[in-house]
Image 1 (cartoon, rainbow, N blue to C red):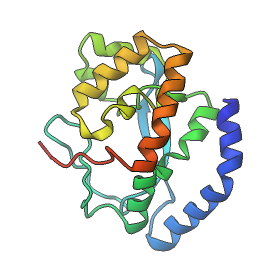
Image 2 (image 1 turned 30 degrees about the vertical axis):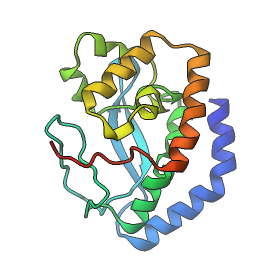
Image 3 (image 1 turned 135 degrees about the vertical axis):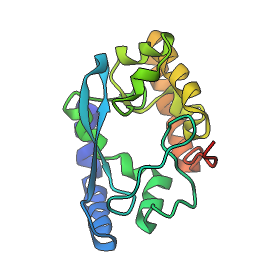
Length: 187
């Protein structure tokens, strides 16, 4: 929570600039709010900068994960840059400050996600969801949702401070190299 407060303060000029850019280039709210499932299966409202056109249709992959592609027509020009730089995730620092998320943990899923978990994948609900996590640094959106869930469950069952530090260390180059942002197949 302390780290998120410091990061919010340090990134506040970026947050203001991004908010202005989102508002100036497309109609609709600046912040995208969506219900997600967190620790112990409790739902919370997650915040992100809006990267798609307002009221964009929800398109899913065959495994029911969110469809995303480099050429997705629903994504605005500013949204594309925000996704590539992961700046769209910055408002989640507010979720961390509120105790709903952590800096490191499994990425929060939609409330219907746990209904399709395997028994082992339920372990991911033992910890707060994170802005970055084990699955995020090992494939991100480039791997199927079941693989990401397995990795997140492994994280929850094997958490250590050292593991968090390793994930944070891997997150920085991943974001800078802009890898794994999109899953290019809808199948």
